[in-house]
Length: 444
Image 1 (tube, one colour):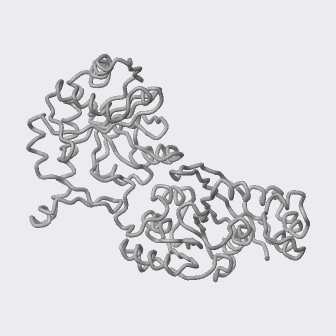
Image 2 (cartoon, rainbow, N blue to C red; image 1 turned 90 degrees about the vertical axis):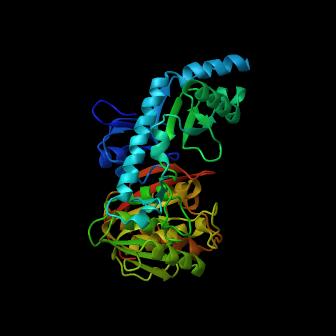
Image 3 (cartoon, one colour; image 1 turned 120 degrees about the horizontal axis):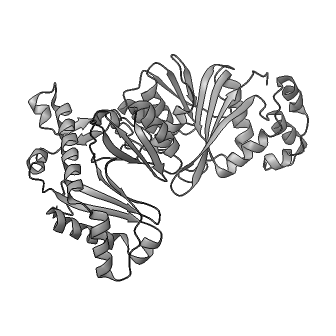
């Protein structure tokens, strides 16, 4: 809600593991204050225009914070539970009226920014384009009902823990909706409400907010074909510095999600996407065209184990290494990983960054591959032809032939230095972002 100094209290939802990225982004981009977080949500206060908030890349959805209440323990008696919710969750009606006023002002701001400098015909389209390529619908009736302080609404409730065991989300939504109608005089409308009241209740938290936008911040209209979640793709690009005229490579680009997120942040870099699948590259080409990046993006059909680029010619390698949960992959990544990483290491320049998204299994494997590295480049180079005790534990192969074992050992990584890792949720499973720098150049 609005503060005395003109700032407004917001919160954004974030995917598992993305809270750290969002905390940094709101501080850096919005100069936010009073920044705090709980799992899946980041709270902050800022005076930035709504258009600036709409450019957040690591957030899922944006809300006006209505209130953060203490966790509520509901009695089993339905009547007593409803009464407690009315008192502890709905609370002071003046807080809701102030929130509605702030929400109205923000919606008016959004509507005004859409209308400035545009012809009447375009104004009537009632669409607003933001920095993420989304088009935000702004209804012309907003100003009418906001002046009446009696909007139509619906409640969306998510609960967990003990509260979920005694009362499901649907029943809680109904109870809260009835309380809002009685206390505030707002009219419930489940189909086309003016606004939505979002409620999150757990054993530790109770958060109420009003969504400010009809579409999620994580939605990208330039992604005609979806691949890796856009927030995670952006996070991968944010962990390494990309300078002017840098060459950025994704050797397994799929539909181009990571490169397109990087292109939005780095207007003067050059991007190369490679994939062995023609169908994936076709979708990537359509995404590139939709994003207006045709002149900056080169797509090549080739194998990631034989990258057709000179040694040390790439500044940054970004790659979501497939592990078969969403998209199938013909290559057995467990056995192919050493060879694939060796090629990435070869084309990467000294001082360059390698950022990988890996399954938990592949993350463990790459740690074993790098386990015997030492800080001394000469000792590492000399050790490439010497068997290490953890070799058989580090790489799983389909053959026990001595020649193949020696080849795998020869390709063992030796110039990559791990900088950091981040665990993120992909929904049904987790993955690990690995960040490496190349410390020196080797002759393979």
